[in-house]
Image (tube, rainbow, N blue to C red):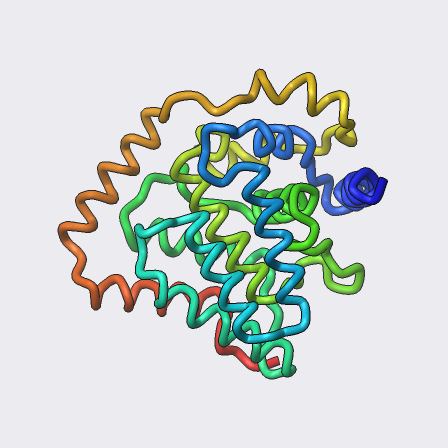
Length: 251
């Protein structure tokens, strides 16, 4: 019953936030049984997040580590991702780090795409970020919170990092996300509140298939960049991305 009300509450809020249509997005995410970031994995991360609610540094580090491993795996240096996320989350809980907004994530993703010479379909929009956040909350309420009524774009650094990394994962592997920001916004307008029966009916139709041509294109780009970038280049790129995300900025 609690899970059902989480779905209903989140869906109602979806309808009131700039017409965000989350229904089809949620169905797509739930249907990705061939991706490493499955629904069961999100539920596992949600349980791990519950242990980090107290702000214990070791628990936060464990959560950040599991999020990184579940999204980008060993494609990027783990410590270079986990350390800044934990530091920003601890600072935020002490009132020394500002909250992160949807637009911060959007700008970080788009700047990263430009810097890497990635195609337009790897870029994001504020609508896409907001919809993904709400869909992730429906699937893992312990991991991603609902937007605060007084500041609907605000989220803690750990949540922002999770949404960012999950979005990057989807851009690389999920054909549904491999469209330009304009195409996404036009396609994902307000949609009906999802029901359990709709999820059951549609999830098989939306099951992820073999890698798309765009996934193969991005893998080829990744291979080229890996041969061109030194470890220092990668660390500098990550540091710039964290700065764009707003990590290290005071309240």
